[in-house]
Every structure is written in C-alpha cells, then in structure tokens.
Length: 226
Image (cartoon, rainbow, N blue to C red):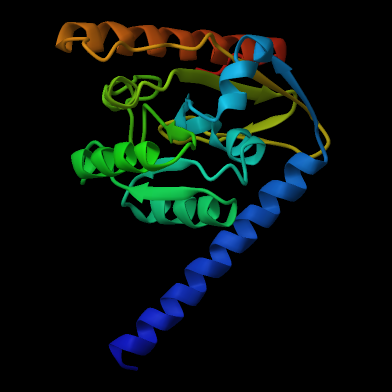
C-alpha cells in the first residue's frame, strides 16, 4: 500500500473516531438533567461570544457538549490522545489548534490569538493539559486573555454517578441518566499592560478559582476526588 492510500485510510479512521465520539457525547448528555450554578454572573459575557473558557483536563466532556456549534478556537495537544479530542471538537463545530506546553505551544498560542482577532468567537484552554500536573494552571491562558482583551470564564462540572479513571488527571465519565452540575466562576479580566509578575498572579487566581468550583461541583454531587 502506497503512502497516499495509507494517508487516506488514516483520515477515514480519524473522521470515524471523531464522528463516533461526538455521537457518544451527544447521547450521553441527552439522557442527563444538567444544572448550572453561577451562570447568571457570566451570562452577558457568554452572550457576547468574546470570552475564553478555562476548564481542567478531567472535565472536558460536558463543556464540549454545552458549547458545541459555537465555532470556538481551542488549543489541543499534538499527542494521539490530542488527535482524538481534536477530531471530536471538529465534529462539534469547533476549530482545534494543535500545540501544548511541550510541543508547539508558542506557535499554537499565536495562531489562537490571530483567530480570535479575526472574528467574534470564543476561545478555550485546558490550563493543566496535556500531561499535568493535575489542577496546576499554565500561564498560556493568561497571556491569551491579555493579548485579546477577552475575559476568562472558569467552568467545571461533576455528576452524581461517575466513573473516575486512574489517569494522571483523574478523568471523570458520568453515567447515563444521572444528575450533572456545571459550576461557573466569576469572569477574570487581564489588563493588557500586566507584567510577568501580574501574569503569575492571575494564573494563581485562575488556578484557585478552578479548584474551588471543581470542589464545589464534586461536593454537591457527593464526591471527594483525590
């Protein structure tokens, strides 16, 4: 089999994975009762479509479902796991940009900034991806907010009945027909003239807020995930 045919088969495979992944997520969350805490404080920001969603790696499923079709721009790692996420996001109507803190991150961040400046659309960043440390925010999302002027909207979720994976991020998978709770934090605005110390200050603020709302979601659903 020549290289062209191999590439064609690989593309068919990844498109199939993306389509099946989107279908699974749609069916899964369609069966659930989804509640939102703190949404009133971010409603106007969300309506503007000029915002950056920030959420932990382990909490991606519901967030991707809630914002499917929004034409958002998300940085996704260049790993094989990242390829799966990127293909699902494409099927959900988002634009994935490949890069991470270890591979192509600066180039990916610059491209994400350009995309957000070209038209009104949201951004999305997983601050502890792609390999952690878990619940430790990297500064890229703060730089993105600084350059674009978009506020960061922290969001997390949990569910009453979940499977907790033994992965580095303690990924959660809700069971069908359970109660699901999304929790939003207050928008975080990063001044354009903030220096490196200020970037770190906002990074810590985001990290603490994401941890707080994640703990709140887990606690209200009856979990303590360590």
